[in-house]
Structures are given as C-alpha cells and as structure tokens.
Length: 520
Image (cartoon, rainbow, N blue to C red; front, side, top):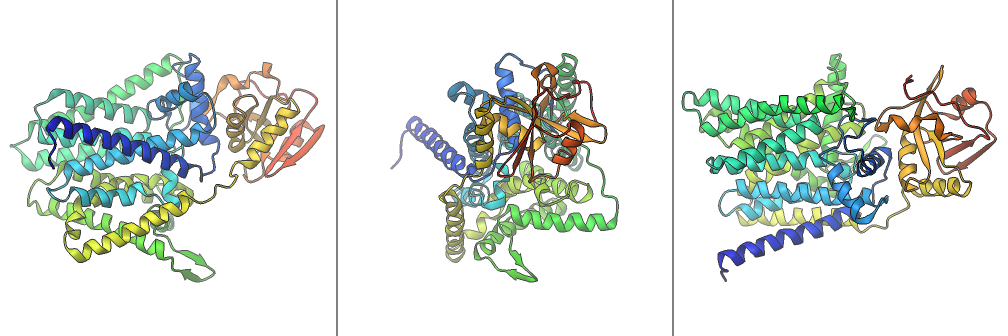
C-alpha cells in the first residue's frame, strides 16, 4: 500500500519520534545500572548555576571539556522541566544517547546502497544501539556523547551537501555544528576537524585541477572553525567565564610503553564491542555472548579494509563521509597507542569514537554480505544474541549502587551538617544526591596542608564564610585525602562515623581551608 507523499512523510516523522521516545526510556533504564560519581554530578551543578544567572559560568574550572554546548542545554531543559534532582543524571544521558543512535542511523540510511538500507541500519544498531557491559561507557553524563551528536550531525550535513551542493544553508549548519563541537570538546578536533581537513585535502590534490567546489568550501569552513573557536574561548575567558583544564597527554616514552598501550587498546576495544572473554587464573573462559559480539569487531575491520583499499587503488574518488569516518578511527587508535592516555581499562573510554564511527561504516560497507539467505540467517541469529545480551542487563534488578551516598547524605542532614569538604569522587555526588542541601567541596592534601581541588569546581565554593566543619572520605578511592592526612592537618575530630565506604570526620569548629587563590 502506497501513501501520498505528505502522509508518508508524516508517518516517517512519527516513527522517528516514537523510536526516540522508546530508546530514551530504555537507555535511561540501562543508565541506572551504572554507578554515578562526581564527574557526572558536576554537569548538574554547572547547569543549576547557569540557570541561576551565571550564564558564562564565572568562577568555574571545568574538566578537559566544559559541556557548555554539548551537555548543559539538555540538563537545563531537564531542570526547568523536572527540577534539580539526581535522577536527571540517568534520564538526560538516556535521551542524548538515543539522539546519537538515531542520528547515526540517519547517516547510515543516507549512505546505504538502494535495497540495503534496512540491513545496514540493523547492523549499525546492533553494534551501537544495543550496548553491553563496557559499551555503556557512552551513557553516563561524564562522557563525550553530546560531542558525537554534533559531530555525526555535521557528517550528515556533509552527506547531504555531497549529493546536493547548491543549497547554502546546509553549509552554515555544518559550520555551526563543527565549531560548537570543537569549542566544547577538543576530542572533536582530533577525530573530527583533522580527519575532515586531511580527507578533503587529499581528495583535492588527487583530483587537481578538477577540484569539486563544494569540497573546497567544506575544507575552508572546517579550517575557519578553529580561529572562531579560539576567539570564542578567549572572549569567554576575558569576560571571567569558565576555563577548561588543558589536556596533558604526551607521547609514549618507550617501546615498552607502546607495547603496553597496544595491548590495552586491544583489550579495551574488545570490551567496548562486548567481545571480551574473561580470565580465571591462567585459563580463558569462553563466553558465548562475547564470541558473538566478535562479529561486530569483524564487521568494522572489514569495512575499514574496504574503504582503505578503494582509496589507495584509486579506482574512484570514494565516498567522502566514509573516508572521514575511517580516518577518524585510525587517528583515534593511533593517538591512544602513541600517547600516555592508556593507563588502565577505565581509559578505554577514549576509544569510543572507534565504536561510534565503526558502527556507521560497518553498517554501510558490509550490508551486501548479508544479501544471501545463509548470511541473513547468521545475522538474524547474531542479532537475537545482541538483543538478549542487552535485555539481560536492561531488565536485571537494579541494586542500590548509590546506597552509601544516600545513607551518608541522610546522616549529615539529620545532624545538621551542611558545609564540608572531601575527596573529589565523593564530594560532587553527595552534593547532588542531597539536592544541594548538603554541600561537600572537593579538596586535596599534601605535606603543607589542605587545598581546593580545581577540577569541575567553582572557585567561590571555597569562600571561608561558608564555615566548613566536616570532612568526608571515600575509602574506595586512593586520593590524597585520607583519615591520617586530615587528622595530621586538623587534629583529632570530635566525632568519627563510618557509613559503607565513606568515613565522616566532624569537628566542633570551622576548618581553616585556604583562600580561593591557594593551590597545592
């Protein structure tokens, strides 16, 4: 049955909206299986300050990326709609991840061959839309998901411009999206702007003198995004606005470090794709679900190989968007191996561009493999395993991951303890769990005393007029803030209580926290 064009479009729009709602609910539920920490809490505290009128976030020192345009707008809508509540740290990331998945599938649809779109979308959705275990690193508020929403949307613009280069407003949208992404998150520079510029430059060199005008315009806009981003960052700093902490990555120092990084990268990729086998003693435990997830790794590797061979054989100019995605993956993998970012498995979150870009190129480039009946049966069986694995986590009973946080907040409220300090990992999340009725500010200690910790923090928090009289220490963390260090600085507390993995030290006087200009 064929519908009139207008009705057909309305049906498609309704389907997309329905899918967005369903996915948002599912991902928000999935997010509740992940423990929140102060990295997550910081964005909620930033947003509340923004809505209170501090529109440039004056006094804030953010982490490596501010979230000013990639996270804060979503949370502003959330707070305005539902109020300041910890549950937003699950609801909003679920919505943002749903946006990322849908925009990625939109790009797959645009670039798929005729008759292969549904298969391509299914492959991409299985890899990206059905996270399992470590793939969930993209869900928490602290991650770069909002950055990739902008990046993939910019690539959608490139895909549309590549087909119809005459429409000027599409260039403007591409420029705004790319500039916003690199302004907020320098990761967008390494896996977005650089791959776009390198691919466009290579294509123009190979095609010279028959350069495609729209590719030259796109290259110019990508290059222009850098000084515009710098100007915006400088202006905000000059106005006393937020300051992002510069990344401190350096090159790997030795061959042993490179080998360590490469090993960790392989382990991290398997974790991200859900293809990791666990180890018991000296024996590998073969996990059937992880084994099926290896198919996702193979799909992405095959897609990369096809894109690279077409380019180097110069059979044709190749697809612009696919080349950008492939080069983004290569840059991501190479930067992880050759830098000092590879510390432990927790740092494999820096490989998330490979998962996102890989799902897109995997769907587009390998859909033809499943055109025959036998491969389709294999794909259907693998899809069933992906869905079952996702559902096993999605519908599992949610344990009290933040039970100790809530119990600690309750005790502090009951004893009317409002202003205190603590280690970073507990401070922010305790403040948010209390809905800002108990304020714990992060600090560091060293041989000279106790100092403010300016990471995802506001300098005005440490004004002595607040009168700090307790310290909260997370015993699960090995920060400089320990019971022995704190007692050495301030003497024995009037009271000590242990609640789960938290230790609370209370004094009957205000603690002499250094002024906001001090630092360790």
